[in-house]
Length: 274
Image (cartoon, rainbow, N blue to C red; front, side):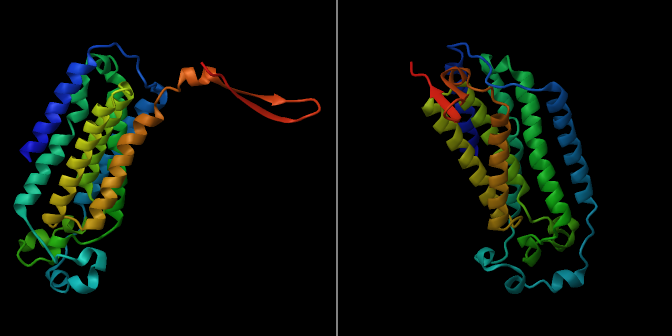
């Protein structure tokens, strides 16, 4: 796991060194009257959602004893049997918390630093969207984690309300949001540096997969849970910056359309070549 963090830190340092050579305009635009309240609302709803998750009732001993792995778990998730690993859980926590500051590390670049306000608001929006989707789903869906079926796991942990929050994977979804958000921002600021794009998106994919794998091994989630969480997190991390991108001014100048009137009717689309 240290190798992953070393790689991510190295990518940030390399990116910062290369990014300072040429001044770049901001690729993003925010509407403060809309975006700031959305960011605050997302954070508030997420916080309330996590509070509601803590209110889930525990399972009694009879419910836990009557759990049947073969009958309760779908075939696609059944391979490998029940599992529990405290060490895998702790390692996944390190990756989970370690990935969240990464989007702020890209602010070390002087071009992105000038956009720190926009980047921060967009990042809070992305995390708030993922958090809202996760807490809303987990609050309303009672799905036992794999560890609830594993007799080697502490009984208190198997019976607590948190053991019914298997769907969907929260850790990989947040990791994916953070990592892919950072990769998207870097790519938007430096669209001509394809190698850097591959490195950032590759690092995001590796970190997300690693966290998803660890959560499965820890008995916290089934494979389909982490797959859904990873997809949701990656989409939120990419789409939030994309929705705030400034339109291509040059393309607007080259591409034009107008109505045709007279003997013929229709719409004419014109593209001006350089």
